[in-house]
Image 1 (cartoon, rainbow, N blue to C red):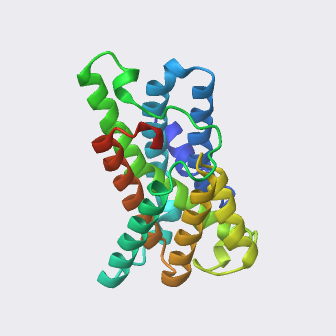
Image 2: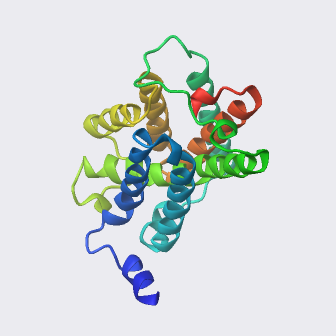
Image 3: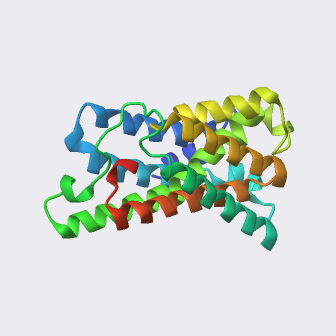
Length: 227
């Protein structure tokens, strides 16, 4: 067991690995759901727990990215950015094109008891609000935005601008989601926040606020298609 743990902790012979591995692992455990819908609950729990574990094991490789603290004003701006993205995500529903829209993630349909549904709901909300924002911000805006400027990305300061990195990451971020256009807009807003604050904490907080708010909206309204 110690050998396996040490292998993960010393994984980065290449500095990009801690930023990419959690993201790729999440995608790999997402893809089978398209072909095996009955496995969706298991796969979501598995990918949430596994990615969270990998992030914890590799945290010392990217802890400096999160080191700069936010002032109260910066925190408030990040929260406002997250809420703005949330409104823009929900408000134009039915207007903009969606890629492969589905029925969404409804734990009450996927499970056979209210207890199991509640447990799955809790994992889904925690995964969306805590695990996904850290994983995605590490990949998209800490790694890829800097990598597109210089392959030796650690020499590039967080929040450094280039048109390729800023717009390229925003577009790719949008393409990752069913709601492509609002996804791109979200990518632009998160990117602007990072350019302004130069702190990964801020954009991660914004992303957490968006995902937590969306989760609460989904649960309260039953709009499962947003999940």
